[in-house]
Image (cartoon, rainbow, N blue to C red; front, top):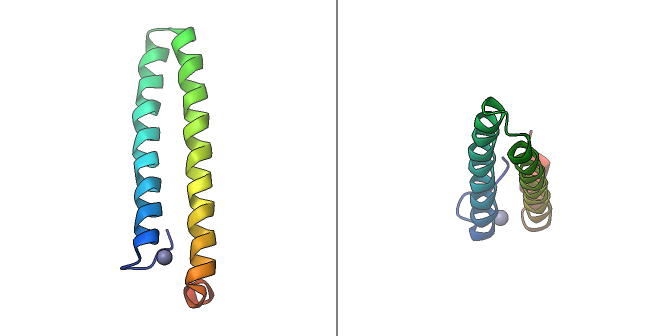
Length: 80
Ligand SMILES: [Zn+2]
């Protein structure tokens, strides 16, 4: 992740992104359990939830990239 130390907005967005990542792994493990139990209804619900979380993560990534480009343009130029 590309964020600037000490910037509240960077911290807020990267915190949300991290939380979404942890949530994704938590839901992913539930999917494993549902599949073991051959609970296809639960699996379908979990797959939809995973897709929603993945979309939220992508949005947070975009928001963070946008914020960095706007508020820390020097950072964008030097970032590898
Ligand atoms: Zn920032």
